[in-house]
Length: 160
Image (cartoon, rainbow, N blue to C red; front, side, top):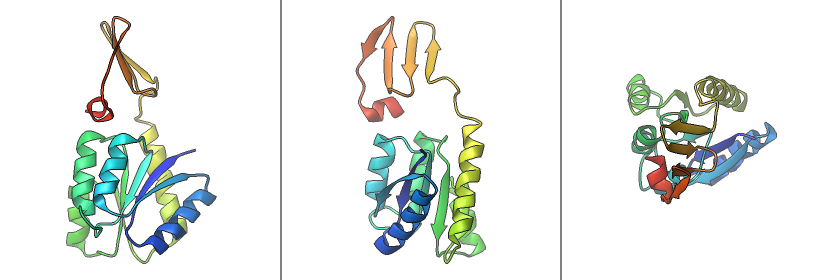
């Protein structure tokens, strides 16, 4: 089941989007501000992120830039009321992979989610264990070992 992070400060809209994604067999985690979104995105694995631009504490553009620096393999959809060409270009410049303006059709959002997940899954590592000489990195378990001896890392250290 794909795991999606939804960053939207309008709780009513969040519930509606979450329900629509759940009906498509997608698991959704919610963040109502940019700080919580950053915390979740750096400590959990997500298949896709949907974010508004105008959210409290850290806007969606800064959040996207930060996440794309540490986790470029996660597709990001900007879902926002800001719809000028300059707004869209700024969203893409921040690292967004797609941009959808409000109001929107749920069917279109779901189609875009599916397309991006499919496109990004083609580039994902096929084996969950990466090896280089005597170092092994298990992407699924988020563990690293050298010569079979585990190396303790915090989630942030592992993501870096």
